[in-house]
Length: 499
Ligand SMILES: C[C@H](N)C(=O)N[C@@H](Cc1c[nH]cn1)C(=O)O
Ligand SMILES: [Zn+2]
Ligand SMILES: [Zn+2]
Image (cartoon, protein in one colour):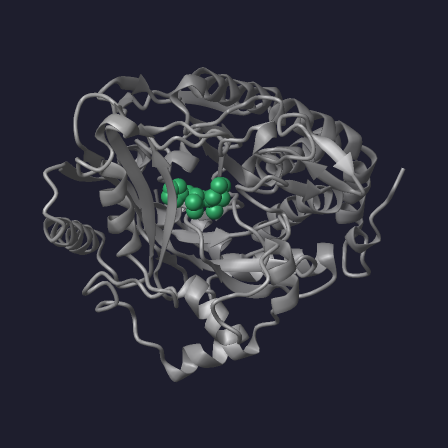
């Protein structure tokens, strides 16, 4: 059996070494569970797979119950699809393990839904069969986010199996709609703020990646996102392009023109006012970017793209983390199969999103985009119908890295990986981060275990065996480090005695 040397460093204690050995010895069992989880096609985007998402949430609940946790499945109601139909949302898991008032309480967030994946998208392995190749575990959801969710559960299980006291109370909030924009979540966080979340001291999210393939990271910021749907319709049914091509305003032509008006060739968003509220860059912040270790070539190789829009480390990171970006994701109703279908689609829906950064206002952004699209469309003198909607949006998040939670995590990372973490932000969005911070006013931290080459949302998504197993050790060590934070414990026992 392979033992990871970095997990048994000179700075780790006897207790840590005992836990690390247990994790190393049981790594194949942990991987087997991940295999079972990856086999569930819990794609939250495609309505036809909603039952699989619910099944995945139930499987997760079973695992938490087996750990000894008390599990509640909270109903989130339903949501409206673009065709007007209503679809049930999967339940949300709120689980609790330990309720000792003398211990700090850590709430972990993760999601068990995944992005869509089909073998024919270009996967070399079946996306729903976890496949190990050269130490990497390939499969949809391996890193985003089933692997990290299991790593948290594995960490707690390891304490239990060794009959060791978990030195923190654990709470879990696990959803099945993150990839679809965390529908229904904010309402529950607000509702549960005075109940389930009332005794939480720290929130930890492990749903993003390191900046490097090898160097661990701690994340203190993420971008938000506003998702837009732009529908252009000419009639009730598709038309023969031989019978009608040349005499009508085609919806797809209108839509392509609208989408083409959004960004220029340098990546700059062309919607007036979008950059107005972006936080200005201070000298202090500039220095932060200069100090970061970032291998542009490695990042480029991970993407498979030959050239980025920017050449310097600072420009690239700033355009990922502190400036908005606009991406076009797809067109519903467009003929996308191989071959030629000589049709004029009657209705097409373009999908794009704008990653929001601090100080940008979502409702102002929505208004600016809708007005701009209406202006561009009106100049085309098209009789077609334009409808712009915002199916989902999420706020950006930035945390205070001087919070004791970050101190505990730095120590845990140093113990397990033998090096200090890179302090990073993330260009992606985890809607719950800002909800936790805003609503509960407690400390929030992102502690990723996936590496930069994990290819989230892509055809070769993976987590390495190393990161999955070391990640499990990291979370176990984090429990021990959080329990050592004196200020928090002191405060907690004071509160307990005065109550
Ligand atoms: C970072 C996280 N693993 C993730 O992939 N989040 C999604 C969430 C989202 C945002 N808008 C719609 N879904 C993402 O950043 O794309
Ligand atoms: Zn995720
Ligand atoms: Zn994702």
